[in-house]
Length: 335
View 1 (cartoon, one colour):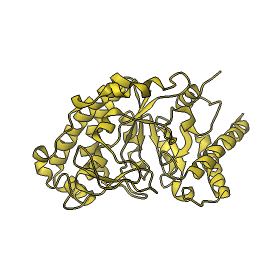
View 2 (cartoon, rainbow, N blue to C red; view 1 turned 90 degrees about the vertical axis):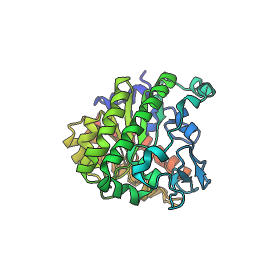
View 3 (cartoon, rainbow, N blue to C red; view 1 turned 90 degrees about the horizontal axis):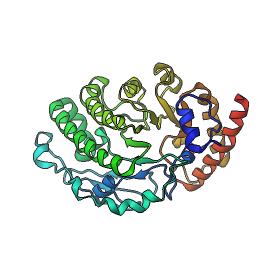
View 4 (cartoon, helix red, strand yellow; view 1 turned 30 degrees about the vertical axis):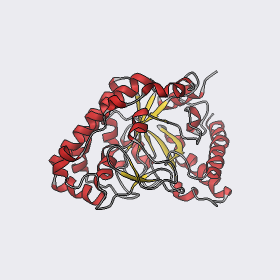
């Protein structure tokens, strides 16, 4: 009998799945329903718990994690910026020392994982663009990509090297099937950087970083819940296996066509439509069905949340239930 792990991998290979429900049921999940385990490096660097404000991590970045948000966000002001002058990044940014991580304290989590029937995915967050604006804020980041591209490239090249060493240790110690990296490259409707600037400064760092992960035989899931379809062919170049989070503002059918099925898309569910505390159950279920009807028959696609999980537990329970119900119905229609 096929396991959820087998079914997800079959779908990823373009074969006909035997089940088409909530994709996160194919992964080991945390107590709060997220499909990834935060890696020891990220725990060492530090992130706030939900409801905490003013948390400062080892990069010197200040974070807030409001109760009604899916994750923490940097709270950057003129006084608390970790990097005020990009040309001084070598003097002002201290890279956390990876030798200080207590890996053995993580053993119990590893022993509890189900590797036989479910996939193991570790989260290595803070991609290249998000690292930049965490250090210096959005305005300085966007200006520096235009005015100081060499300094930005040097900083991100050094950060990519640091991430490669971090991921080397993570893979050696945890032996994951997937690593998920978070880096939003646009807003709801537009890219943050022109394709030319992105390809000149950001893409080379990912060629190094993702190239290393692929060389270790680990699959890559890239979370990017924004407009980013212009970079879909680049995602193929970078070896990304799954684009997690494509929002409906992207032309999903066009992305599948332009990448010839080489990029698997997991997303399409619009959280701005369903993820609020009093969302009607009927609306949630109708939206889930709409995503299946619009995209699921295109191939190289699996319906999923564009964030990694709804903020509200009630929404999560209804949406996951409808994916299971309607996914089974959808598969019967295709049989």
